Amino acid sequence: PTLYFLQRLGFTEMGKNSFLLPCSVESKLMPRLLYFQSLGLSHKDAVNMFLRFPPLFNYSVDGNFKPKLDYLINAMGMSVDDLKACPQYFAFSLEKRIKPRDRFLGENDVE
Image (cartoon, rainbow, N blue to C red; front, top):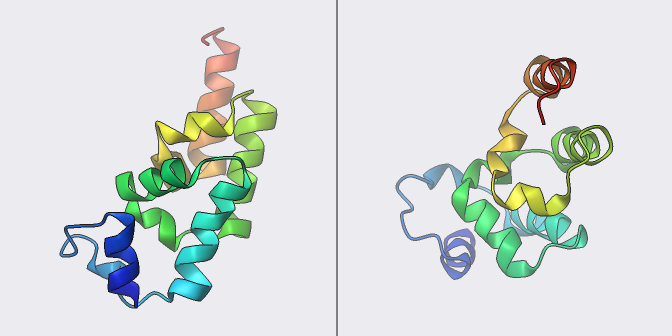
């Protein structure tokens, strides 16, 4: 079922993404995809984020997506739509990379 699901989303090179094959569609893949749709992204935009950066499927909604999204919106003043251009944002450490760089930019008046 996982291979079929991923192929329907548009994944074509499963060799590079074989780490996704043991994942459960119902308990791991779909909830993450639906989370981004619940934020207002279209199905197509959410799928494209995962196609651009498949490791998103391995990140926790509560432990990764929510705190980083909260910081992106409330501290950095950006929007969910900004994530479409850089889904890799979720790969960076909030405390060790995102916040320090945001502080540096703020302290140096860089927008």
